[in-house]
Length: 312
Ligand code: ADP
Ligand code: MG
Image (tube, rainbow, N blue to C red; front, side, top):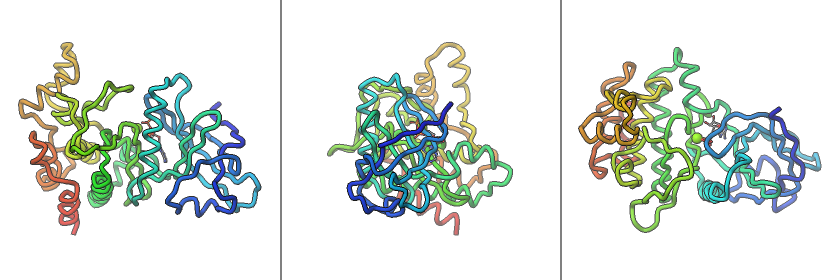
């Protein structure tokens, strides 16, 4: 049974704040006992977290409509290191405000930590692509690609490296708009342009990693650009992961995935142009994201301009 009834969970710092204004507020509330979060069933799960669909309801019943929300919480086995990661995820989300980034509504810290965010109606882009593959038009896919590039450009300017950019972590607002979500692996950059990975608490999305990340654990805005190229392949593959020639065979022979992938990429191999992907999109947008030298990769602002040109 996936439904829970949480009482005394959510409130705002000001009793007069309405649910509608919650959404438009820039600040995030430490929610306590003016609002209840009612969880209605799990919509996703990852390594250490679970995401539920739910509603946010005012305790006094004065609010018109309960607000639909998505709620992320740690799985019960999660250790303290996971808790630190979750706190980082929350703090990063709190600092972000952009039309193409999923919005946090509030946090509750009583019995356990709940991250309450806006509910994005059509769920993950990965499943949306699979469900709608027959009807999706090229123009729509390019609109999604443009939204992602705009959101990523904003993130880079805010000195955030996402590190888990993939179709499963993009949420679909409507048939032409998407938002970036899942800041579980994201990091704030210090003064330098790179972040060196510490031993991770969770499985890593190796297939989306740039060669310098696979080899040296080095992440930057430009390794996010690499992942963006892989994400665009997923989009034009309608949610199926791209496959690199010979890597599967090497893995079957017992070579670790990270090493097999790195060897292939350093040998010059790249994910092929998806069958339904226009050549111009592959050549002008996707392939340049996979330059071995990170500094030769386009920045997200340039990618957005290039897509805009293709669309018009
Ligand atoms: P994890 O860290 O477990 O990967 P995510 O944040 O990626 O968690 O969420 C897992 C899944 O839950 C997503 O792929 C998506 O299907 C669903 N999901 C997450 N956040 C939302 C949201 N705000 N609205 C709708 N669905 C969401
Ligand atoms: Mg995820």
